[in-house]
Length: 396
Ligand SMILES: [Zn+2]
Image 1 (tube, rainbow, N blue to C red):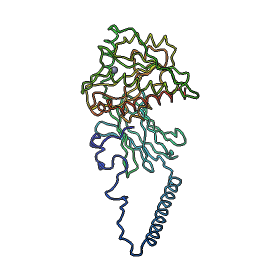
Image 2 (tube, rainbow, N blue to C red):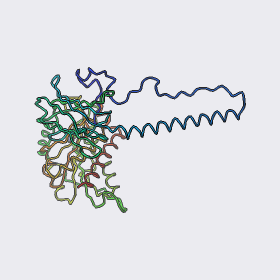
Image 3 (tube, helix red, strand yellow):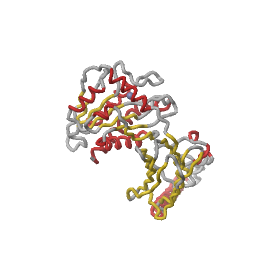
């Protein structure tokens, strides 16, 4: 889920005081425990220990009071979603979603709809939804997706970008919907055309053997990971000068370690800096008895302010895998949601097994470039892919 900074929101949302964005604001000094210096007791040690016992009681009562009030709140004030008001302003669509308390929402952009989940919330039986005429939004609905979650579903007429802001103090979530600024699919298609025409080295797959043991979550599963680019095809070059081909290999190795430790057999289409032709990769995938195929890339585009996570698939049998990976990357990396997208990219199109192509971050975005080359963040990307794979196998 994406928490936009106030500066990224336009004038309309900024008409709210900027400090109301984000989560809880701490007022200066409030809630701070200041330990006061006590004067030494004139009555010696005994009195001091009585004073300490007294302080202990006070601390106990204070803690008990808070535990009781918090549990009373959680029983008495079940959060409800009351109202959704659509509007249009400055060329964007807005949804003001009113709840009875502050909720941290989760957005998920799919091919033809945007879902906003409200965890820990009940749908009010008299929920009001008001719509306006829009070139982007076809229909707005709200359902109780499970006993704890309300899902607002925004059916879309065209590709969009969105932001979510939580208005603290007003118990309101604002969804801002604008036209999608898309420069990535075209760039990818152009690269594929060129890459297909060039000869690659013969595929030398590298195997990460599965860990031994019993009751491992991925025992018996085989995963093929494809670190995008290699050899004289460096992929995108980050502004710092480092090529995408290095990063995809790092991510693939880290992911392979996690998958094989959980019992999966993992093949990397390359484990060194070499160039594979896309057709050879697909031939290899289709003749290897694997369960899933994941191609790893990092995104790039001409607009440095564009960032976020995109996940691609093409065949219908690949959608559950791609959806699990996209959701897991969004929740794990917490970058902007650029959507789960069906696109005719070569490897995902021609793979017979479920296949997804991942673009976790944009190397052309300054903040994400920095993150991409940070070991902790690389570990987070690998962990998110691993979680997505586990979730996929658990539910399919
Ligand atoms: Zn790439």
